[in-house]
Amino acid sequence: MLKVEGLAFLDWEPVSLQVKTGEVLCVEGASGTGKSLLLRAIADLIPHAGEVYLDGVACSDISPTQWRRSVSFLSAEALWWEDTVGAHFLEPVPAERLQRLALAADCLGWEVTRLSMGERQRLGLLRMLDRQPRVLLLDEPTSNLDAASSQAVEDLLLEYIKSTNACALWVTHDHSQAARVGGRRLRMQGRRLQEVLG
Ligand SMILES: Nc1ncnc2c1ncn2[C@@H]1O[C@H](COP(=O)(O)OP(=O)(O)OP(=O)(O)O)[C@@H](O)[C@H]1O
Image 1 (cartoon, rainbow, N blue to C red):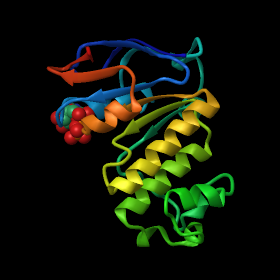
Image 2: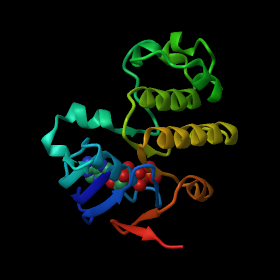
Image 3: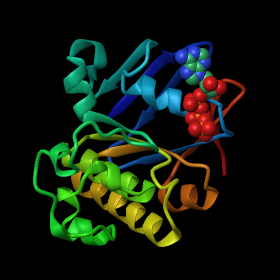
Image 4: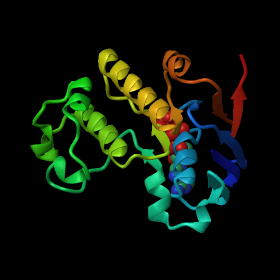
């Protein structure tokens, strides 16, 4: 479904990989090894060589807006550009989703400036799902969350991926999270991406 061929950025070795429908591929590696750069290159947010295909369609053959709507990058620190939370959403957020992530029922009416780091992260995730992406590029999606909130986010993401036939590349520093959510695991080391065996 997602095919990355010879994707090269800065002086990292070219990356080739495939992520199948319904699959979650975890990316681990020490800080500064290039995990975020990899996700940003796949989302076409930074200059790169090589090509990325979604269901056989090359990124270079469609508009950047179309690509990023389908292949969505979630930063650990999501940006907010409107004054209120709700102005960032295209559709009403189901009350059940807010409740699952322990978010207040009225939080869409809040000013963005009042949000805690954890609220920003959980709402950033809901904003991404609001666009119904096919590929989720998740950069430490639970880095600001406590254990219970992290579990709720993992459950929601896995349910979304399964029910919509999406797929994900999931960057995490948490080995237990990688074991819970991922099948295949990859590691960034020495400017190259390697498969973690066993
Ligand atoms: N435009 C750039 N030019 C040169 N180096 C860059 C550029 N952008 C990022 N870097 C460097 O590339 C390296 C990898 O950055 P990246 O954000 O991908 O790391 P990471 O593996 O996601 O780290 P962390 O786990 O700390 O989030 C860092 O040393 C960063 O300073």
